[in-house]
Length: 343
Image (cartoon, rainbow, N blue to C red; front, top):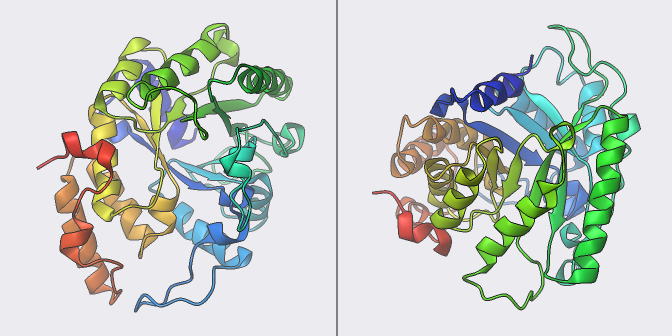
């Protein structure tokens, strides 16, 4: 059994402790920004002249999996296939997952304006291809696929677009059922002007998220949810509404190191049990150190401020020049985090 399955079982049984908090690394950017999503290939002095190539990116993913701290590694289906061929998941407790759809609001390629237009559903991954082979192997046995993926929806308070998105979600659930495929559900904030007052948007997102699964029975429900952190009140409202639903938070932009740890701390404090961070890990000076201290914060072993200090100490020990000096990197810059920031 993967570590993820063990944690989900304890959470569902009401036996959650902070050590059960689930951390996922989102390395699925090739289905959105594509080439630039691999991140800048930085030297230790912070300089860089190009992005990582796909083979280099796959090796970076290997390093995170072999570190054995994250619980889920989310990639595109093609990169999961390559990682399996490389033997990365052999005997690993880290669960591979794929981005199961790639709606147009994640198409943020250079020069493109797709993401500035109302989201439309789209799906390129084949569940029947991904889900073939041994899904829950014995220890040390090879795997050839996965039974877990991320499905995302963006609601924009647009009847036609939102109806189309829900229809596509229904088709996906039918496909998932045919292929014994499980999923977690991501709902973004509106990606265009929704004509909803900014202070109401967090509650709109909560409402449409729960409405879209209200008619879905247990067999077809998501394993957990993933939403933006829209503040303590909205997170607490969603997490407490239905104890049978596990709520997670997405990472958003890179921000400061303090933003990363503060988001993790606040999300857990107000009811989230999962964090799926992409850029906050991938764009860090030292992704492995970032993941290590994320786990310490999630488990309650250190505060966000202490984690920033420890992270900078680790960079100094390895001779890595930080992107920001410590004082700046220890600032909370994301407005949604400021009202509840820790001491």
